[in-house]
Length: 351
Image 1 (tube, rainbow, N blue to C red):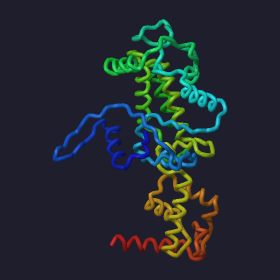
Image 2 (cartoon, rainbow, N blue to C red):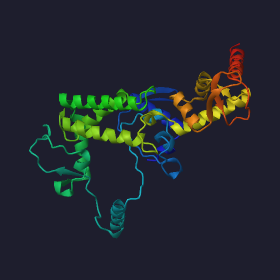
Image 3 (cartoon, rainbow, N blue to C red):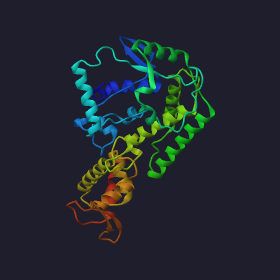
Image 4 (cartoon, helix red, strand yellow):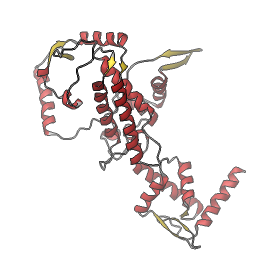
């Protein structure tokens, strides 16, 4: 809990554990490497107390993008007003204070017998989605297990159950991975691909866990379909901006588009003040962005600045085409003068 309150040193140590499943320790002259293989479930609060859809997940919880990308699933729990859900939640809290349902609460319930043994494959279900299955009422469940029994069962299947993918499940996972990559490439052509083999490995791990919790040795197509629904909900939830559009680059980028535009605008202001010229070529803008740490598609950021009237694409005093920073107090000059000043300063720096 309070994952966002950890300092940078703790994040660095956790990054090694999640990436290499080991932790390096060097204390009192002893250097050791310890195995660290466990599942991590983390909860973080957004900065300022409220989640801002205009920012990325990394900006909201103030975590580095590499660390955030190590989690298989990321879900946003936003407290939006909902009359039905608010009534259920308030009733639950009041019942707890009134003493109803006191005592140890059941943690798990077995499904009624469906004609399959624990080690066999699940019977092929109908086209129910994962959400529909989870919304089945308590009437479909019985034989309550205690928390102790559930822990014993989970410990057993973790040690003894090692499921493998069958052909249909592997085909479905591969199809989902290729579909996500195709959607990401069409949504943002020319940008770095945010959907990588890490997401495919996450799908495989989740599908194996889905089969393992039922003590089955084979990952079926139903297991793959359930984890595909989880992955798609997670990706779209984390990548949806304030305008409701899905931007896949928000998943791995530590900077939102609005913040990147503002940072590039400030960098251009500083560069124009330093060179006393409002004119830039596209190559000059890309160089300024590179030095300032602004990544992504710079030409798209330039288009946004043009739409906001911060940049004007026009001819300078010498008739050359370039980009003029309209909010700069230096209103005259030419692109060749600005480029000559930049090249001179670069050559002096190289010397």
